[in-house]
Image (tube, rainbow, N blue to C red; front, side):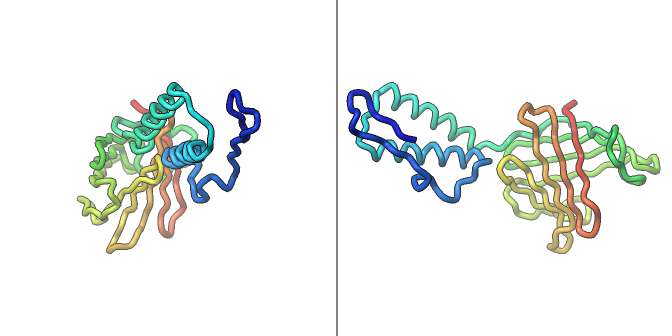
Length: 195
């Protein structure tokens, strides 16, 4: 991008690929923040002058962007699994509802449904999002951490991952996608809607 300042046709400001951080993530809020800060740094190194209105606009924009970049989404609520048109296990739970209470870094999830044998299904997960393993009521431990806006929960047995669930909420907050991979089994993908 090349621009000239008002009243000075001879001075040019040029921002090129070499001015940007090479390892910037384009999908995260932190990556966007890094891009904006890099562009502002390039502009500040130039001989161009800024108006007070322009500078105050940049400061307000950066403050808002910084606040957004640091906050993971809050997954709290009740979520009903969409089962119509989905490939379901014969013995897996049906009519599954997730109740999530989430306030960083604490995460609580209760899954309730009916098994294929018509018996009640209840599973509780309590952990924090720091990535440290935490013992669970079942025989598995769980470790959860954020990867951008996706909560990744690893289920561990004797310190080894046996399953990984990746949960991502839609931008409008009405859907929750849950992709689960298992060691030695086919992966599953589930879609939940907010109740």
